[in-house]
Length: 183
Image (cartoon, rainbow, N blue to C red):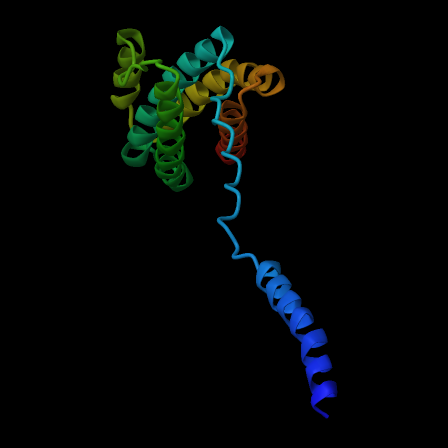
């Protein structure tokens, strides 16, 4: 029995050493996972000279319409025009804020007040009250809307700046809604 035991021990011990050695090498401690790739730097949307001109026009339009809408809240004879004035003030102020933020990212400074000629028109309308105010306000809005409508449509069709297109679409939709209420 001793021979058999020795033989098994001699055969099994190298095999045991080999198995222990291989099993020890087979387990490799995991290292750090590879770092994920860095995200691409966000490039600002293209901003052309036409975009800058549009921003200036829309800013001027918004400033005048906000001032006129504020006047409509207190001077209008029609209740719907007074309520529309409040709604227009809020909506156009929000659009104005987005427009100013977008302009500042492209180093464009926008005026914060209407021009002297526009202010004169706002002051003249502010002297009217009641039905006379309503007629003049609707006429001024319809004229201004007629001028800005093709500018908005052109900007939506041609601009490569998605933020500017979104602002133009929003203003276009709002103005159409306001025009429908004023009829």
